[in-house]
Length: 400
Image (cartoon, rainbow, N blue to C red):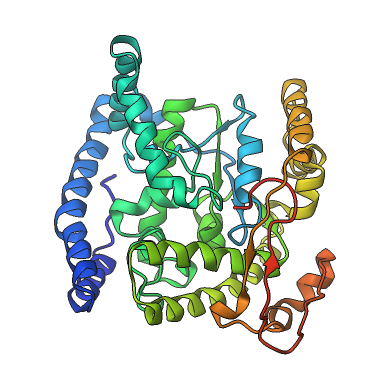
């Protein structure tokens, strides 16, 4: 299969970049679209094709019972993914750097270079890369820890295809670009994208072990649950949920900080944040609506407070619902992680007013979720815009 490229979205981004009023922003976007994307996308496409010739064993690899961790951003998908990834005998995942190089050839070359660096150069290149990571990811690591060799969201595999939601960080044109509502796209377009995604997973399994199970965490995939089931009929899906009074402001703050670092104007940021807030309500409801139509899909639901307070029990319960046995070695790992989780506490404070949200808006839209999962609905100043901070990460690991 050839590499997937979303030409429709690419040309739309190009038109938006041409009309961008911020001169520095316009130059930056046009450079990315006219220089970076064509070069890297072509390079990836060539390597993707070479995989078939250089690695004939790739044809024998199949994607079986993949596990998808979904849920609103900051709901614990990162923590759940990290815990389950520790079951290395069972699961395979993408590391961040691997998402930008989808072919087997590219990844093998990078791994070879890393080994030569450690063996012959005293890890000089590795140290420089780590310093770059600290500069690049440091400003937002308190909200979402990232690193080139850490597991990350699969959606980035579509970055050079101009189909990844991470383009929104560079192009804050919410309402004019859509990377979320994939299930609403025409069937032909949707299936082309998902076939390419499946091929990328096959290549990762070829590297990590064809007998392993792909493990994915993607909050953005809440908008493509039907597409996942259509592409992977034997998929297992885990939905993570957390009090939206905590997750929605946290996501908005993360995006706001990213856009402000790129010097987008405040009016554009406010419009984009309002659209993201509305999309968040869909993110909570839609996965449950789709899964209710597909009782044949093995599925599980994880309430964030339970994951934080009892990670071992929660993960083991998910395994039972998905039909996976828990090995003695993995059980011991979870026991250690449970002790570590209880010793850690992280807090952040945000102001809903700066995002244009009213104190009772979240409860009006998602009141039944508060009842179902037993979340606290007490907010000061009910019915008015919230003018004081809300603590959004009460105890435990970072949310997703």
